[in-house]
Amino acid sequence: MQTAQTLSMPHGTLPLLYTFHFYLFALLAVVSALLFVTRKSPVAAALWLVNTMFCLAALYVMLDAQFIGAIQVLVYAGAIMVVFLFVIMLLNLGHGGIGDTRGLGWKLAAGAVGLGILAEIFALTKARAPTILTLPEGFTAREVAQTGAIAPIAAPLFNEYLLAFEVTSILLLAAVVGAVVLGKQRGDEHAR
Amino acid sequence: MLGEALFFSAVLFVIGLFGVLIRRNAIIVFMCVELMLNAVNLTFVAFAQQYGAGGQVFVFFVMTVAAAEAAVGLAIIIALFRHRQTVDLQNINLLKG
Image (cartoon, rainbow over all chains, first blue to last red; front, side, top):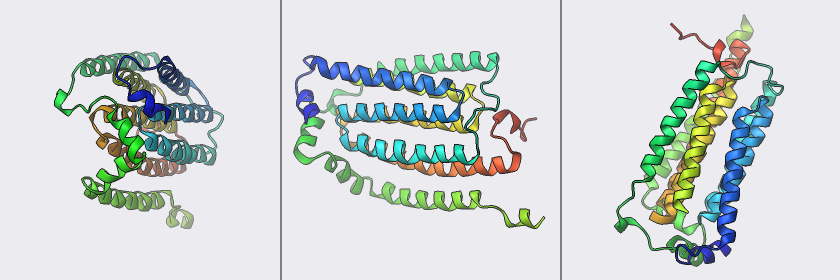
């Protein structure tokens, strides 16, 4: 429980090693994301995105969300990205032959929209929630150290958010049925 | 580390948005949407550290919805490819006036 110990210290005395690793993984995530957006080949892009997700999992662990970090690796990097790679392989798109990026006008427009949203989000980060909502320093880390990483998530999931949890199962069922129906070869196409 | 996490999540979100706007390969556009979801998850986790574990529960839900969305979206892309033999978004313009 290295993170638990470091985070229970008062703010400002965070060990240099923690800060160093936080910035290391965050910069790796940003660089991988930039490479992901600019790669021509879909396979290379998908693998850079997997790298971004691994770095994000490391950040989650450093932010006292160990369980979320684990399911980030299992669900996102493991399951979802495998499905993406599988579809790239199935449609035989691996060589990136199709026209890739849009024209200069689109790039300028995208840059303008991106800068606008970035400015907006930075303005929002200045806002602070009332201090009465803020937990004491290192509260989450102590909770994880006492009850384990899963209990702080499982308790609200099966009490306060039980309805949302059940609705999620209906969503997954609908998604499974929808994916099967959409992916199925239609019989009448063969008949013609 | 709340401020730093929010900064990096904003940067990742904008990179994903940029990808959605400039790429023409439907699968890559779709992966950019996943990157944007991941950026928002980082915000949730960072806030959960200061305001309680409810934020982590929401990350859980976002991941579930992302998995469902990936399954349905990729099925749509496969159906589209079967129909038009391309995933280039510039060729998929049936609704264009």
